[in-house]
Every structure is written in structure tokens, then in C-alpha cells.
Image 1 (spheres, one colour):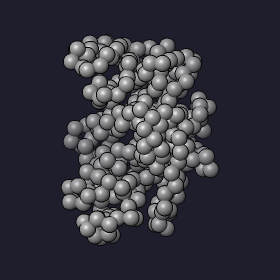
Image 2 (cartoon, rainbow, N blue to C red):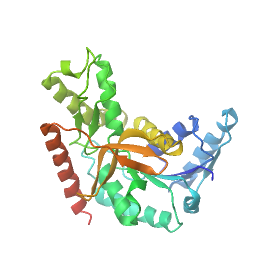
Image 3 (cartoon, rainbow, N blue to C red):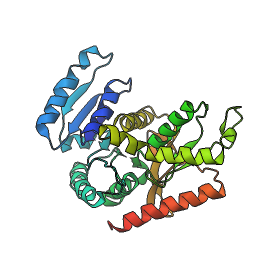
Length: 297
């Protein structure tokens, strides 16, 4: 079976994702682009096709339609209103209407692959995808706090800390929080970071998207690469542990926790060891997401 990726919503985020796929060595046979702006997508495809002769593998890139979903390995949805300086929850109602139209067309073509969701508000839109389609929850994945974690590692490196284990969990939004590595033995590790510094780093992670939006209008390279990273984990059956938005059955919502990702999507939820403070922050995140879900049900 060939590996086909269908990308729905080919604005900045969608195109950053597609370009990352083209430049990867993943076993991808075909990429189909779907967007309301047909003329622009035709131009994007023509441009991308010029890359193919320089690749070391065969690849088909084409203007797609919803019939392409019937044999797609992954359908990635990045469609929706662009992020602004306000909360990611802004535009929720409008994005749900957009998603209803998209999901109806995807499912009417007997899609049987894995959904990757990158539209904001991320956790709510990932939940909406699962609930609206009644799809297998392990096959509906939101990028969640994978990007937030990458931002954390950037900030830690700038401060001179070698830490690849601490991660960001919870809502992909203003209630996200850092779970610090509790087995840190590095002499420049987290135990040398003061509580005040930790709070400052947490706030900086939350605000980084707004800093980028303030300067260039939107964020897309980071999230595009996160989508590519998840695609690799799925297509190569990597069984890698990453912080992604996944279904919390007990609370009936999507939220980011550590999960093992492979060819079946989310293959296992990994339980994290929380401090009392981290446990409370996770509860706070769940409450915010749950309240947002109530507005669309």
C-alpha cells in the first residue's frame, strides 16, 4: 500500500508541513493539496513539482480533492482562522463550522487512515474531529504541546542548560505547563534553575507564539515541522514518545500527555509522575478545555 498524505488547508502552516515532507526521507509516495483557493494551490503544486527531479526518491505532488482521502495514510487538517494576538480560543465557533464541512467530505470518501490536527484551538478542534466523526480516538492526533516542548528546549539551550527530557503538557494554550525532568543529574541541570526562573521560562513558552505573531503575522515553520515529525513517527512505526493531544476517556476531552506514536497512531498513553503543583496545573488545563467544549456541544 502506498503512503499518501492529504493536506487540507494549504496556507502558511500547511505549506510549511508539505515543504518539510518534500525535504525529508520519509517513505511518502504522494502528497495531495486541498484548499479553497484553487488557483493558488495550482501554483503551489507547480512550484513544488520543480523540486522532484532533485530528490533521491520518486514522489507525486498534485492538486487534490476529497476523493483522495479514500486511500490516504494521513489526512492533515490545518484549515481555519489564523492565530491572532488574542487567545487561541478565539474563532472557535467559526472553525467548528469549517471543520464540519471538511469532515463530512473526508468521511464520505471512506477515509481509514490517521487524522493529524493543527488548527486552533488545538485541543478543542482535535476533540471535535473525534466526536463529530465518531472515529477511533487513537487515530485522531493533535500536535498539542509538541511545539511548546520544542520552544522550551530552545529557551533552555539559550540559557545554557542541556535538557531534552523536560516537556510541556496540558492545553496547547495559556494554561500549558512544564513538567521538569525529575531524574536530572546534569551539573547544569534543572535543579540549578530557581523557582522564579522556572516560572519565567514557563511564561516565555506560553508567549512565544504571540511574540512571533507580533513580528511576522503568524507562526508556521515550527508547527509545520512538528507535523512532519509526527508523520515520520507514524509512517516509520517509530514507537517514539512525544507530547501530543490525545483522548482522555475519563474526562471526555483531548489534552496533551506523553504518548507512544507508531503506525496505529497513539499506541499508548504514558503516565507522567506529577508533583502536586503539576497535578493542579493539569486539572486547570482540563477545566479550561472542558469549558470550551461545552460551548460547541
